[in-house]
Image 1: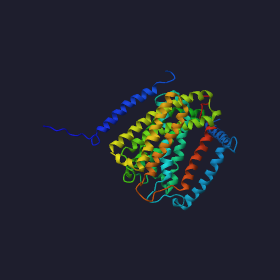
Image 2: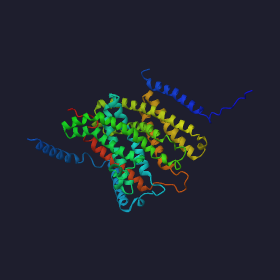
Image 3: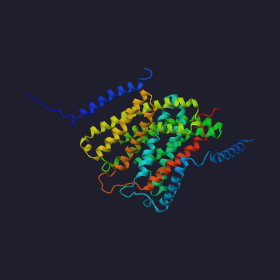
Image 4: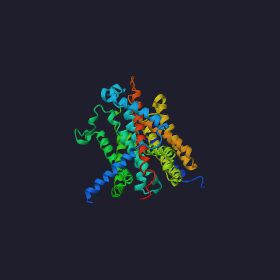
Length: 41
Length: 401
């Protein structure tokens, strides 16, 4: 029977991929935030 | 009148005009003069001793610390601040965003003077200053050296910026034909200048790649060149915001009232660019930090110092820029630009001076003479800047053209 193996996110590239995905999502939000003018709204 | 006679009379006219323009205008006893004249005099005295007695007589440089404050601040930081010129010329001449056209001349002038004075300050730091010409004339070219690239790029970029600015000089000296020829060179020079800038901004960072054992691991990374390039974007934009705000107050009379209104819109556009580039830079730093697995290094003084630089002087100004663009707050933009400029100074000095040989007991601390000479260089640049903008059509085009 196969046992579960613990995946250490710090030892793998996992954290870097997560960071990159966060960046891409937040970047879209930043651009949208900067593109809308509060006064015009 | 034949051709040579007309050229001679033109030269005579120009020389007469030039000597007239050299005469001082306005009051002598201004706060700016009162502060800068003593600094320049003391600086010149220090430089006299530097060139007669050697570097050791006025600086704390040694064999262990051959690069000190003059390289770290004047060259490495000053060139980052001059980055605004390549960004704005790219936006105006390549992207054709006309909104920023009114600040092109003053930005290019700032860039040109920054390179002349800050990169020129390199001469002060060389033990044998006359050897500065070696990479250019082929005496020990050193093709594999990053310094070879940097020295050639500095020279070529200074020429490119001079050509970009030269239509203003021709306009001022009333050389109509020459102005037309120089104007036609602008686009090609701008493209050449941008290519040079991207390479030598990153090249300055690449100078520190071989100092891996000496720089603190939180600051050393093989991606220093990319970080230097990206940070030069918001350094340049913040400098334009900071310098432009001061110029608009000091040289108010020289600026077209129409430009006063459009200037606020320009500031918001620049702040938007700064916010985006700082955001990208922050994630680069975070990614490099995670990739290097430096978690344990955050527990001591250097860890706190690193967080101050990255969060306090990059992430917070980034949010301030973004918030102020959306809420149209010029005051917050000004504060954010100052914070980001401090962040750039700290980052460049951290890599070149502060964390350099971080684990050695006898650390290098710049002497007061080094700081005074740096202030002298800045003061001289401001004097030349003031002389040019009060005489040449820098803030607006001559109405005859």
